[in-house]
Each structure stands twice: as C-alpha cells, then as structure tokens.
Image 1 (cartoon, rainbow, N blue to C red):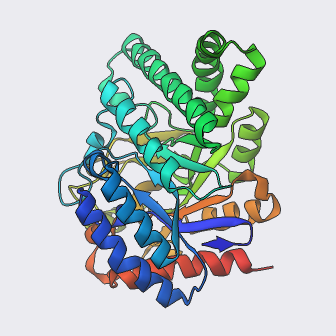
Image 2: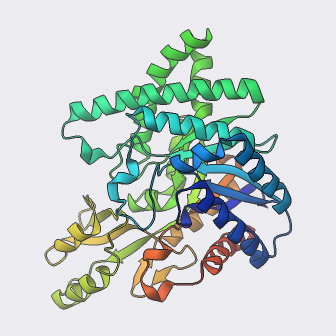
Image 3: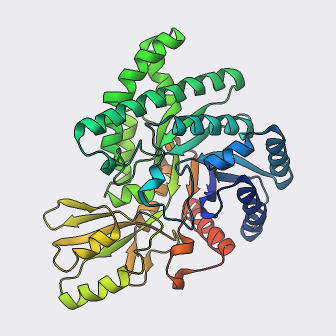
Amino acid sequence: MKINDFHLSYCSNIHPGESWDATFENLKIYIPEVKNRLKHKGPFGIGLRLSHEASLILERPERMKEFQEWLKKTNAYVFTLNCFPYGGFHRTKVKENVHSPDWTTPERKEYTIRSFQILAQLLPEGMKGGISTSPLSYRHWFKSEKAKNEAIEKSTNQLIEVVEELVNIQKQTGKILHLDIEPEPDGILENSDELISYFQKWLLPKGKTELTSKFDISQEEAENLIKTHIQACYDVCHFAIVYENPAETFQKLKTAGIQIGKIQISAALKVMIPNSANERFSLVKRLEEFAESTYLHQVVARRKDGQFASYPDLPQAIEHLSKTKDMEWRIHFHVPVFLDNYGSFQSTQSDISLVLNQILSNPEITQHLEVETYTWEVLPEDTHLTLGDSIARELSWVIETLKKD
C-alpha cells in the first residue's frame, strides 16, 4: 500500500508452506483480513515470499493468470519478492541452510532468474521491482580465505548472468528490476563495509568486463547497469545486530553509488549483560526460551573496550554467559516491531525509528518497505497473538510512525 512516498507491505514468509497452493491460500486468507483490520481502501502491496517449489508452479501460464485475476479482484499488487530462502522455512530445522543452495550454484541463479520472470509479469506498469537474496553464502562453510574467495568469484559470475537477464527483461518490458543483496551476520557479506568492498573489488571489475563485451557498451554504461540491477536490501534487524548507525550506513552506500532496493523493517532482541552471577544465571534461563531449533540466532556482543565478538548461534553464546566480559548482546531473533522491550529484554526498535526518520527526510533512499517478522510460531507463548492481529499491529505501528511530523 502507498504510504507517503513508500510502498509498504509485510513479507509473506510469515506464513508456513512451501508449495504455491499453500502460499496462495494464505494470501487469500490474510490479505483481505489485514486490509480490513487496517481499514485500508486503496491498492494493497504484497511482499511475496516465493520458494523454488512455488516458483515452478506460478510460472505456468494458467496459474499466473489465476493469480493476476485474484490480485485485480482483491485490489492488491506485488512489488517485491523475498527469494533468500530457497526451500523449507517453517516447521523444519533451517539454521545455516537458509543460504543453501548458495550463489556458487546454478540452482540459486536459475531460481532467481525464474522469479524475476514471474515478477516482471506481476509488477504494475511504471513501478520498479526487487528481489531480496542471500549475501552470497554462509561464511563458516569456507575454512580458508582461498576457499572463501573462490566462492565469491563463482557467486560473482552468477550475479553477472542475472544482470544480463535483467537488462534483457528491461528491453522487452520496459520494467526495471533489481536484485537486492541482504547482508547478515555470518553471511559472506555481513555489513555495509563488506558489501561496498564486494562491489568495488569483485562485482564492478568483473561485471564491467563482461557487460562491455556482451552488450558492446562503455565501461561507464556497464557500471550503471550493474548498479541499477544489483542493489542492497537493508534489513534493519541485521544492521542493528552489527551495531551500524543507519544515517552513516545510508551515506556510505550513497557515496559508493549503491542503491537500496528495499528496507526490511525488523527488530532484533537486545540484552544487557548483568554483573552478578545470580542475575546471569537467571538470564540463562530466560534466554533458553529463545534458543529454539528452527532458525539461526547469531549473537554479536559489545564489550567494555568497544570491541565486538560474535557467536554463530544463541546456544553457543549462552555457554559463555557466566564468565563473559560482554556488556551487551544483540541477537538475530526477529521480535515484534511494535515492542521496544520484551519482558526484561529490549529490542532494537529504536533503530527502526531512526531508519524511518531518515527515509522521511530522504525519500530517495528507497521506496520499498517490507515488515519482516517471521518468528511468530517460535516466539515464547506470552507474545502470541492471532496471525492477522500480529500483521496488522506491526503495519499499523509503521504507518503511524511514518505519518508522525
């Protein structure tokens, strides 16, 4: 839905089910319900999570036509896809396998191109569209710098092929589509500095060489194509976990010429580490409620000396809690965006407010906003609402924040 200068929705990865039938059924249930709860009368934007399995079905002409007719009847439109998770994302052990298959593989490339071909058919005329994706791969799968660099090189070659496809789609349809790389802790690309370095050392040099030859264009034109079709997905939770300041990050990306295709509005769990042994023991018990087995809950710690440390998952962090010198933990556990605290814990909701204030002052940063809290099924019981309530309450909080003077 259009709020001020922005297209806002929630990401449908909140709903379980990998098949297109399950995905479509959830949309039929929840889009009308959320529209009604919000009393929204205009077109309603959808942030569509499309799995590999679902994409194989939706690309069929008869299923595409069926979905397009439903969108028209419902007064809804699709402006962004989430193609970070390739396969199962609910009610199964996902953990680091959310990156698999990664960008070193043809499977990831083919799935992404197929999804862009689908988005090109769904996207309204005159609107740009994006797909968020993995930050190349999971860094702990590579045991040496050489192995990691080989993975980056393979990934870069695949991404350049995606750019070529997006250039062709634009020529055929006039629609500008972009792939939005989503840094996250323990991805090969974890933060803004690594994303910028990747563009400067890998993607642009290799891409300009390939595209100048492929399309018989200048180096400058090739660079513009790459920066048009490969952008960043700024997940507020992820950047808060690595303690980045939104205004500084937006400026760094702007200086580097990297556009932000989408901002995912999400909040991480924030915990201040107490000094006493008894309080730490109590903290362990409370944190164990969040150490569930479905998703990876990376932890980035801030220490008294200003240094940072990281743990690959919450259980490993908990093991160090009794003796740690950490002052604060930020945990990759998406909590409701409308809460600034969760019991005795806090959230990084303040980072969302900073981001929204930035884009209100600088709407050129991005036009695509997607609320992404996918953890409702694994949150401790005292945060559970009905799913329709949860989605509407999060969107309402964002709308109210965007409309504040």
